[in-house]
Each structure stands twice: as C-alpha cells, then as structure tokens.
Length: 207
Image (cartoon, rainbow, N blue to C red):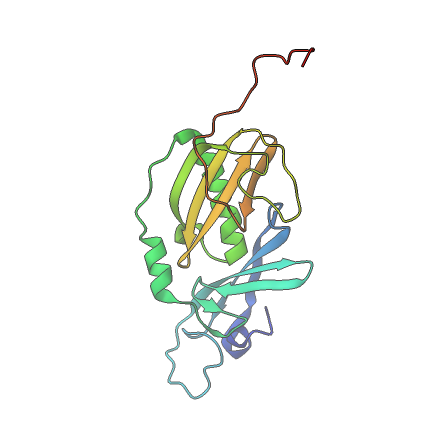
C-alpha cells in the first residue's frame, strides 16, 4: 500500500489506516480496506502535472489469497496493479442497473452473494446488479455446477440460483441440499422443471 505511486507521491502517512478486514470462505481470500488522504486529487505519479492543492480522501480495497495479491483498487476506479483507470462506463452501467424484484426470503442469500463478489472483484456491492434470484430444482446432486471427472447422484435437489452482473459479466451463485451458497465458475443450463423418476411398484421376485 505504502509503495503505490499514488501514496508515495503525496499520501499523508499519518492518515493511513486499516479500517476493515474480512475473510471470504467462498473464495478463500482476505480483503483489506485502507483509507488515507492525499494532498492533491488524482492517481499515480503526477509529476509534471498542474495540480490543485486539495486534501483528497481515498479508499483502497486489496484482496489477497495464498498466492498473493489478487486485486487492488482505489476508490472503485483506479487499478493499483495495472496503474490505470477501471472502465468507468462499465461501472456506471452496473450502478444504474434496475433492481430486480425477488422473494424477500432470499434477501440474506443475495446480500451474501453480492458481498462475496465484491470481495473477489474489489468493487463496492453497489456496483453489482441482481439479474435473478429464485428457488429452483437442480436436476442432480451437482447443483447445476458439475466438475470434470465427477459423478453425481441423479436425483432432483431443491436449491437457489442467484445471477449477478458486474463489469459486463454475469456471475452465478448456486446452493442446494446441504451445500451452502457458492460461486459456480462453469454453470450448466438450468433445468427448472425436473420430475423425479421413481418406481412405485416393487419388482416381481419371479422376474
């Protein structure tokens, strides 16, 4: 954080503080939220630029896992790793997404999904739109997200599907049976109407 060009250029060291630290079980990652003030507006190394002296507050969200830093974004618009502006048109499109009505019983799960995705993408949850949130019947025990070389019990499973949008991409969160909500990286097409094939007549022992 202290080595970032924005902070080294004009960050006020005594204002730097860690304000929040969260762990996400779904993504196995930590997010750290820092705040600090700088003496001028703007980002990065601004040598040679004409600057206005104006104390400017900043917030930085850094996401890490066991492999290192996954992302670092300042004020939701400046990528500290790439040292460039995040696509502002995409951000604006996401923040103005019309809210989709859904069952109030799913509100906690939707909030959980949005919080997890905001950590993964280092963005505010307000920049995440809800496309869909429904109770569903998954066709089998894979919960709509089968993994390669895995076999699953072929029985319908009651669950939940939440589809979110951020940065022009769609993200699906699934749950079902005893499995809690998780991000499905490669979802299959959902089969909402699955009728269990149950043999109600016992086989004849003479057969």
